[in-house]
Picture 1 (tube, rainbow, N blue to C red):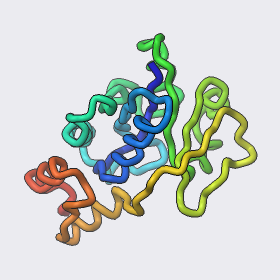
Picture 2 (tube, helix red, strand yellow; picture 1 turned 45 degrees about the vertical axis):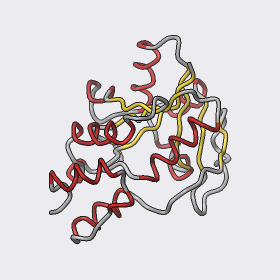
Picture 3 (cartoon, rainbow, N blue to C red; picture 1 turned 90 degrees about the vertical axis):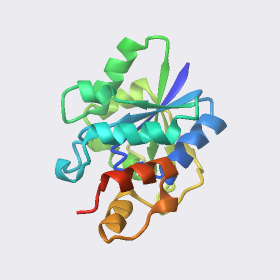
Length: 191
C-alpha cells in the first residue's frame, strides 16, 4: 500500500490540512494519508504546543468518517525532538509492505537541506509537494524524486487560529465542527 505521510504539529488541525490530505488521497496514487502528529518539531518552540494527546484526539475527531485518512501517534513513542528520518526508518521496519511518500508544503521544501539526513530521505523516498503562495519551484540544490502539485489552498494557519481564539473571536468555520466543539469545551488556546 502506498501511504502519504503528512507530518505536522496540527496545533490545531484546520480545514486547510484536511483539504491537502484529501487531495492527495483522492487525486494521486496514494491510497491512504497518515497524519503524523509531531510531539515536538525540532524547528518549533514546545511551549506553544497543546499536549500531543489532545492534538491526536482532535485529528481523530476530524477524520473519523474518512477511511482514506488516519491519525498516527507513532512519534509519541520515539525520541524527542522528532526527526523525520528516524520516523521513516521506524515505519519502514514496522510496515515493510508499505511504500511511504512524504507530503509537504513548498515552504518546508525550501528548508529541507536543514533536516537531519535530508540526503538519505531524498534517495529513499518520493516527496509530493503542494505549492505555496510565492514558492512555485523545487530548489535547485535538491536532487530526488520530488513532484509538485497544485492543491487547492486556504490562506489560514494554526497560528492564526490560536491567536483568533486568544482574542475571543470565533474560528468555527476554519476548523471541523467536532474540533471546534472540543476546543470550546476544553477552553484551549484562550490564554
